[in-house]
Length: 171
View: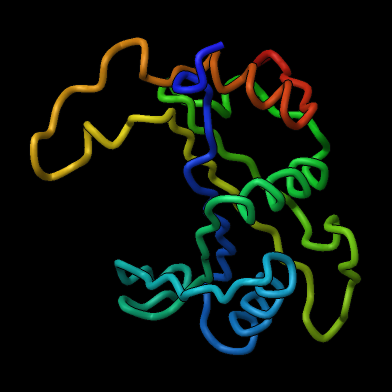
């Protein structure tokens, strides 16, 4: 197979939505740092939602982006924590996919601590093929050729082979 056509992991974004600032947000940041070994940044509320007690520009979550070997290692562990199965509906037409993890205690080495609580997280994975940069560069930008674009089926096959994930058909 042509090396330039192999799918690759561009980045993995991990997000924990807490819904409030304060100690719970600090606890969520601590858990993210323990799981990924990287410092998270805070996500800020864009609107005021009085029904949920959220004010505009208030920190309500924590997120971080992983790339390269760290992204691949984390994804292998996260897919096992999610049960090693994904639905086909979790993949988009560009080959990206997302899934959720209900409890941080599903990760190896993480235990329940009553002072911290339990946090779930969202994991979003952006995929690419080599050469995608021609569509995003600033100078001499060009359209990405059709064979270079990544599709849903390409990513499904990649995830099955690389991580041993079972793909369930949407019911």
